[in-house]
Length: 414
Image 1 (tube, rainbow, N blue to C red):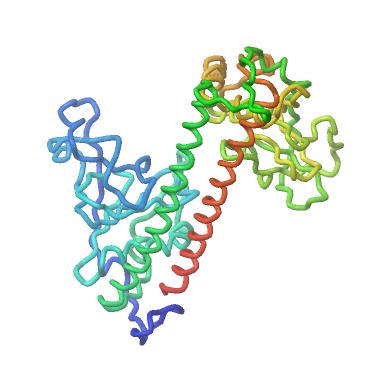
Image 2 (image 1 turned 90 degrees about the horizontal axis):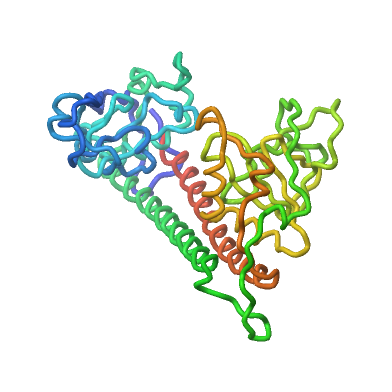
């Protein structure tokens, strides 16, 4: 017998313990044979780990026919809970969601159907609250993927309140989810607005004017090497631990560079016996570009913020650019992340496979740019940075809302 720490005032008393399997039914999925066209391409979404990027499951890029459903998959009716039980992403999170309509699901996914006394939304929120517990049950397969044993999930302890209390909990938490969803939509709209403005600014559909109201001159074509004072590749000392001490030297990895900005929390500590290479220390407004890695991680650009701490060096998978006095570093970094420049880089990547491509300092230096005067660069950079600040505020609001919900989940469920 147990009771939650946080409860609506009209409910009291202990909750009886049972096993999850006692209040649910379970199903396994499958994938139709891929070499039979008649099984594919109709209107039944096939849910897999790749399509479980939201908690509300109703759509997938992969669809099957009714014949494909009969011959190789299974149907999860509306208000089922789908949970991924096999895949590499299980080591980082447990993808799960509630179905908003009838969907098919593959062999890496389990379907959990609540029985009559268990509300579907309550069950979903309860499973979501137990993500850390479920995460601890993930084991490794022989091929490096993670897996969850069905019996381990079915034996989870469930403390089930009355139907009325379940409904109230589910409605309250759904309202919290709706608030988070609205913030995510706001973030998406701001991001789309920024991308749209970048396209108009870089195609010169929109032009700023000088402070005296006069028009700026024409943009001039140049190469990146003519806009910087140096193009430096980094160093790769063997670093075994992450640095958290501000007095220690850290080595920035590719994960320190992201489309969303600079993240110094991923830096590795330089061993005490190694002498830091001072010429590779990053400085405020340096531009960092990922040089090697998977295709989608090569050419990622970040600008070192003005408040960055010292004692950070770049690793050998990063290239550092120092902007010359004729150009604005923020604008130059934004230019490098534009679709036109990224297409140039992607067309010139070399490597044995898509999983490991690379760009050289020469390739980066030869990127062709079209740039306005430094004064117009600064106006554009300030404008886009102001949008970034609005986006960052929303990002923080989303994180705060998620943390608030996490606290609620910990207290509302036993």
